[in-house]
Length: 386
Ligand code: KIV
Ligand code: ZN
Image 1 (cartoon, helix red, strand yellow):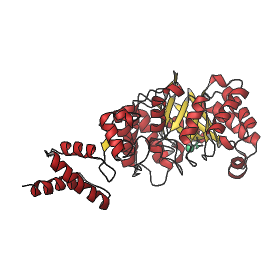
Image 2: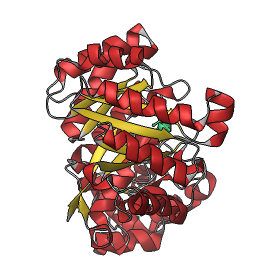
Image 3: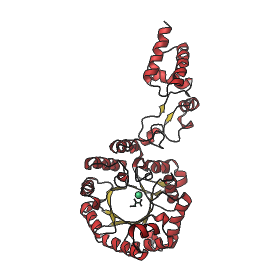
Image 4: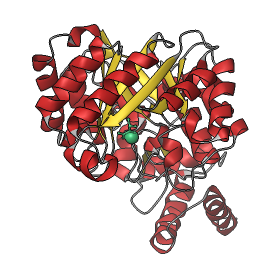
């Protein structure tokens, strides 16, 4: 089994999503939970971007002991200096330096020629290595960059001292085959690539972030950048919980492990959702309220007989006590009887039959049937049979 490192950027890329900003105390709370979840790296912010971000990175760096803490920096000495001031007292400080390498970003955003971008990247990595034992370098918009140019940038930044090379799909544009192909190309065309850890960073604009990330692991990526609940710019980043659980459940395919404590996933997801005021859709993979809920009668009957009929993993894997049987218009008698027992109702077979009929009628009229509704049905049936 290969080890894949999990790099969480909830507090940097995730916090960039509209309405998701956190104060320092909230960031510390999230960082402590990420450490409990056992992520390898926490990107705590962008120290040069604001005094608040600087302070939050510095505070987190002083508290977190079991995960590497890092901060983002543009290819500017002043950004790298700010990152060093914020991170200098940590055990194994890392800075994350980036610059865009795609034609569209170089021409319109940076207004720089490729040679200038190359020089800025190399000089910045060399400068960062004067302070930091770990320097991650990212080619922003890698998936729309010329691969031969990017290979040159990667090779020379490795010579300048980069320890991690990250190739992001900044705009969520690639397909899994293309994304894996890009890493393959870089591995084949950069002679010193084995000196670094290769990293991916996927955005979800076309809903392919998870597939792209997993494809890149197959192509040799050994660090995944992700966020809790997939929060992040626009459609978000790849969701940490999806990668962690997919690697675990489909280890037969990916042959890779993480050091995540998967049973901390639900707690982490709830905390981030609450603090970022960002509700999780019911059908969200792994952490949505319905991810382990069963409503259809056939499904409920199957799960009651053997959960594996409709569950590919146990809810306890992510720290949930149990899945839920949701009673609705598709539910069957078996689940209804179980619910009655769960609610402490001692009904005869005849009473179960009568209340099940009444329940079906109610379910046709009402979307959400609560325990209170069901108890009131039982009461009516009991009254009628006196
Ligand atoms: O999406 C992106 O390219 C980024 C970089 C700063 C790594 O977030
Ligand atoms: Zn990003």
